Amino acid sequence: MAGPDPAELRRVVDAFPAAADGDASGRIDDLLDGTYGRLRRDWYPELERLTETYADGDVL
Image (cartoon, rainbow, N blue to C red; front, top):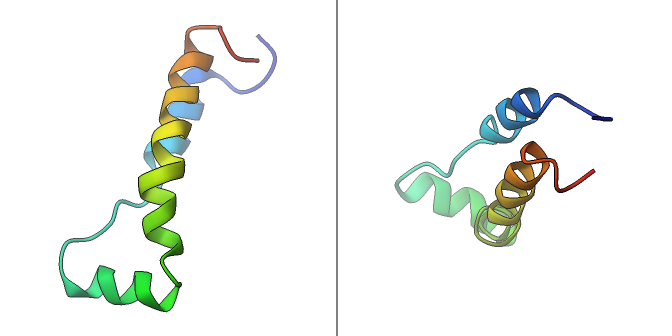
């Protein structure tokens, strides 16, 4: 398979920081105009799905 090892890709994706609980994460997201929240809500689930699909050999 061309590209990274699926396990290495999974480690990189899993290293993406999760949103912290509490007011601090809300304030940070506000300062970023909601970008971090959109990444976690909209983009990250798709990245996880593609990572699994890649590991299954269905995505190059």
